[in-house]
Length: 226
Image 1 (spheres, helix red, strand yellow):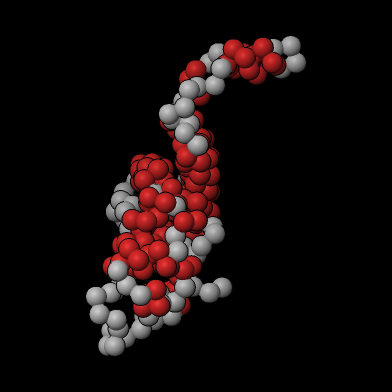
Image 2: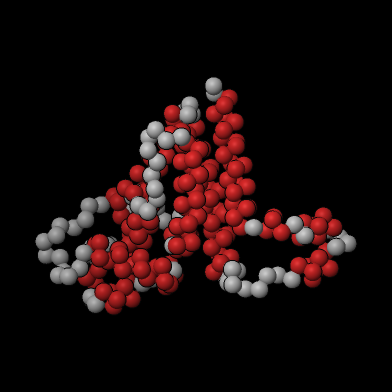
């Protein structure tokens, strides 16, 4: 596995004037927020910075390495729990932050799993979640799996949600439920009945329900250890 974090930055001497890794990452994140992962190129980034494209490679060896650096910056936006915080409110705040940051930086949530998330800020976030879980009585393995399971739910939900929003879901007219009901009333009457329950279709409500289910499962495991 290759990663930008496995190599040391080049020494500052003889670097192109007016550029720094921090400035490159900052501008790249602005472009990612505006255009997404697919539209980012080193040439376009260099043009935005008023620099020669090859000068960027002094600071970041590849485009993938640059994206790794950008991804790690987002993990720095998470509020980290204190070691003596209760695990449940800490987890809830972290997952709500993940959903909020997914909407703020859609490219970031889509990049999880495709690019490495082993930078210092990502590791600090993961490490900060372990102490409350361990203090609750979980083993290190149980705590790590619990965090992974909760995060997997939040990431999966957020990816579907940001894709829905990207298609104009929030601004588009709602689907014609009457037409959908007419299509399926005879063959799938239970599904049609569900269409008449608007609370089911609340994005916020669905996220809270799923998060409750995952947390309840972990709470049951913690209770069994006592």
